[in-house]
Every structure is written in C-alpha cells, then in structure tokens.
Amino acid sequence: MLTDIVRANRQLLSLKELPPYKGPKLKAFPIHPGQIEWIQQLERSPESEEGSQGYVFKVKIDSRIYALKVFKFFKPSEAKYLLSPLRAKMVSDELAVFHVDPFYAECRAYGRIQRKEESEGLKSKVAADCYGFLLLEKKDEIVLNRMGIDLWDMPEEDEYRKQARESPVRAIVKEYVEGETSFNPQNCKAMPKKVRRLKRWKIYYKDIKEDNCDKGSKLKVF
Image 1 (cartoon, one colour):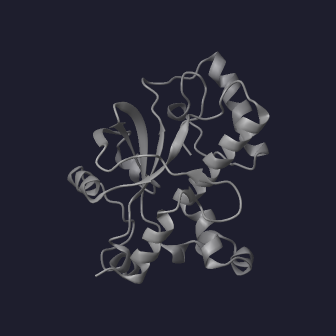
Image 2: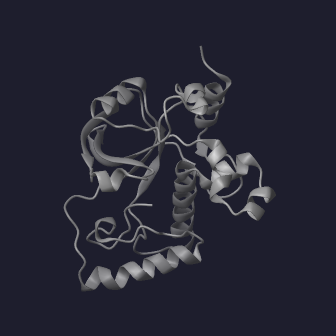
C-alpha cells in the first residue's frame, strides 16, 4: 500500500521540469522504459562514497554512452538543518528542500548553466553537457542492489525511510567523458576562469579536483 509520501514524491517527480519553483529548471530526459544498460560504476571507493550525494555510472541508453548520476534519498526534515537558524525561520519546508536537496540543487544548477550559455552565446562550454533528469524503474533498482549500492543515508528503522521506501530513485543524465584527465597548462588556466564564471551566475562549484575537469577543461561534476 502506497503512503502519502510516496504518492506525493511520484506526482512531483512526474513533472516535465524540476524543481517546480521559480527560477532555473532542468527538463526531463526523453527515455522509454527499459532502455538503460548499466556498464560500470565510476570512481567507487570508501572515500568517494562517504558523505556523497550519490553514485555515478557509465551507462548506455539507445546505443549512446552517458554518465548517469544516481542520487541518494533525501530526508526533507534535514533541509533546514543545513541553514542558519535565522534563515531556517525565513523559508518554508518546501522551499528549503528545493534548494538544499542535492538532486534539486543540481537540477537548478544545470538549468541555469544551460540558460546562461545560450543567452551569452559562449563558444566553449563551462560544464560537461547535461541532458535532463530521469526516474529509475524497479528493475534498475534491482541492478543497483546487486552492485551493493545503498541509496539511504539513514537507518532502516527511520520513520521517513519506512514511509518513503517506494519513492522513485532520481538520476541526472550527463555527457560521458572518456579517459583519465590530468592538469596541464591549458586547463589550469581555463578551469579557474570557468569557476569564476559560475560564481557570477550564482553557482558555487565546490568539488575542484583533477578528476572533475575533462581534457577540454569542462567541469564534470556538481
């Protein structure tokens, strides 16, 4: 039997653009059921998983290779804990979730990047392409379980987890960049410029490291 939380999550995530709030949005990825071929997980290590927002995979969809970021479930009551006490009093629970939940935050970031790149007519892209968000099917969740992927950062007895366990698993489809990256004179000059550009767009890129910059100095992860 579906809970009210699951129904609300399914209804919300069935929208064509997210988050459903004023400001930049990311469109849904056009996909038909049963099209994801899971190839391998990228960058798996205890250090990379502890405190992470989710997991990144190399996948094939309609004969094309992508990087798919699968997000962990987010407990709405935790949204305001990440804000200062003063700010927490100034925003609704819903608004806090749409800004603090890593999935919605990344949807907003890519939506803004796409809008800014188009409006400013940039010759070189700031970040690796993002093609939209999608929801995983039950059989995809089974594949992840077999890989040992745990999308819950909360104990099994947690009441929210019990109520939300049938909620859709959320993911974002991105450009897959083949091969290892390394800092060189070209991207060492270009990367700070792109980070500063993001800051002007009010997007704050915090994960600055070699693995997150491709050979053309496009930023890969948010």
